[in-house]
Length: 284
Length: 239
Image 1: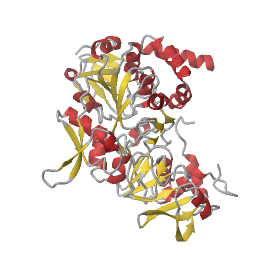
Image 2: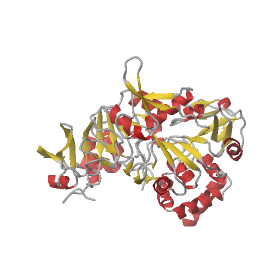
Image 3: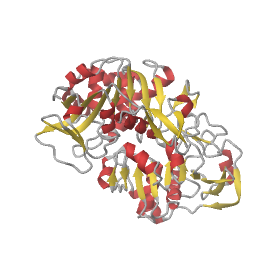
Image 4: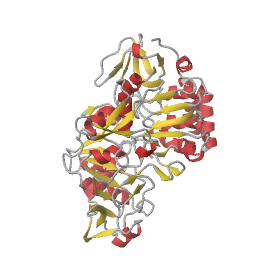
């Protein structure tokens, strides 16, 4: 498993039409990888993610997605994801098919995928209107007859996660809130990890998740690559960015202009941050 | 917005204080972001120092100094007794029956406590696409008691939901800006009003014919100590 530039990893491993899961529950969201998918103009993706967050708002608004598989699509603590809403409510820039689950269902589906099982089982989805709108069925416990929910396993073509560190062999470690990243990597046919830094040796961390090099297809350095989300031990969540995104994303033109300036017109994570710094300086 | 004539606290503050009072010391609370997080943290800072805050991001026993803007802020992990993965959180802790109280909000509620946080209008062609259920469907049936916090308006308190995201079976209390509703024979009934609010105001803010308890009581206004503790809570980096 080589340590390669992120542009090469996305070019080789993410294809038009793929089912792609970029995971990270509030923490360690792989923004740099998402931006590279936008730069390379991927189309017709099925995007899978528990909490789409601003990165999927950006991918959807830039026309990369055909379908979204998710469980909670908002801007945490702020409000709506306006690009997601525009796609669902008005078909802009393209209609977006939804496959909607609960958090518990999504988590069970990833865990089933990682375990090479066809479906996950949980006590859930009972009684509401969601089961009629999504891929979930009822099964009976073979021992007690209890009715349980079955969700088909997530088996993405590509799973992408962000982590704090890799060593020079490509072994990866992430810590803090570790979300559903281990399951995402192990459920996916191909896996990419972006990392804050490459170090000589991984030091064991409390609660740390280690992904051995041989379960990954690419490891790519992306310092500050989770911004505006955060990387525990490296930098805090940019809450002001999430608040400001509400106004940027509300309008199609201001959204497009923002993406042009900070993503399409930048080459990589470093120039993305340079363009944000330049914009902040200009308005200071 | 003030809660009533002659008050020096907001409706949101009244809601947070009233919800916090209902959290007993030692209660394990599954907390969402916004007002529930305010209420649970207020309880922990006042009468219930032993209440355990569980956030769905996987942090168990979080003790944030500042209120988080998202359910996965770093401070939650730094101050938690344990940090677990998301599949573990939902399977072992929520489904495992370890949570006493779960807080839910919504865009719509009906008289049975069923909630809609999915869409306004038709699912396939919604007039408003809401964020969706997230943890709500399993929280609603996986915890012992569900607390709902919601502003009371005819748009939110509706005779029929546009979409049922979660069931009301375990809703024990609904704290609103006007008062408190509790289920009586399976129907949410106004059991208390906040200081300066009358039952008719609550009736007018409800899209169904609201049942009012025979012995309607008034909630206690926030004490100075409660307000001081509440106002000392600040949202990290929020607006």
